[in-house]
Image (cartoon, rainbow, N blue to C red; front, side, top):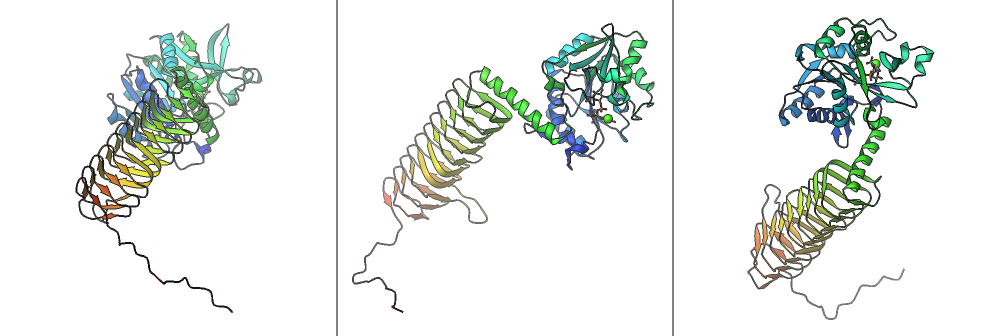
Length: 458
Ligand code: UD1
Ligand code: CA
């Protein structure tokens, strides 16, 4: 099958410099949703019609094309003279021996199941239209039937009063035998209220040529909902997020409130996972069995091991958290963080590009960057790895069972040996030997006979 995606419209009502089809829904451009769905149907040809927005649309498509197996073509529609004119731009690229499915770049949530049903209903010789009954069909093309059979589509602006009362609408998505499509497109005229070449006029031509016209309906109205404004984009975002939340619930994930979760990518959950309100998941996030995520956490491309607890207000990005670990509240794990089993990272602790082995703890107010930390290490409050000299970055190594006293600075490159102890307030500039107490601190003294100054009487 050929798939043509119409994405040339300007999207004026978005009030934005960004072309409409590039606005993100669930963190992914609208057009990419459509392309991803189209690819599930394994089309032999996939062509995106673009126009407004300059090179941005074809550039995005080119990027996607390199990430998938099948190529994606683009065709420029300039000027935009209607949906029929848009499909004409793809004609030279279409394979005549298979049907052509037309999708819209601004209708992101159609499921591949619904498209499959439409394509199956049309087989190789019929014209198939995805239609839906709408309480308020204003502005949309109406499906005109006679004795139950579709005879044509009439646009709102061209419709009579009786036709405007029809509630079955044209989603715009249709599938057509390609050899007929080419002929019918060539015969289109723009003699209508909008002076456009309407793709929908091919329906009457099909009927005149004795080609059967069939319809299929999606499972939900939202599947054919288009985005024309930020209001509609926000509505579809919530709908999509609710669908994702429901799918998670079906798989046994506990969501404290399914209307307060945002998944912008792929969230993979094991058994008995609990997610509290206000969490955002981006990229690919895996939560293993028994993980709990507290309220208002952001997880980006992360793996959280079985039984780990992520407490409220954590930010975790490109990081691995070992099983049974406890993170937060208010912890930040930056890219390259790899935590072993039962690691405790507490409030206002930032970890970057560091490995922390099993049972180690940094419970309060610390920065650990470019460090390799062994097992059962205790990092005191206020500890800082000074990994950057303003030009280059260096590593800190802390071996097993070391104890880092509070408010220590470890000036990298530096190593703390196995079982070593650093006294509180140490500024470590040379390696600390294993098993010994190292301390860098001015000796404490008490001044005898000193008295506190007092205010002079006025
Ligand atoms: C079209 C249908 C209408 C249907 C409605 C569903 C026609 C004539 N009418 O309405 O029956 O109910 O969609 O939303 O087909 N586009 C181009 N080039 C153009 C014009 C449009 O690429 O020259 C693209 C737009 O970017 C958009 C899609 O086609 O993705 C639909 O265009 P839009 O103007 O929103 O729809 P209508 O023509 O009003
Ligand atoms: Ca239009």
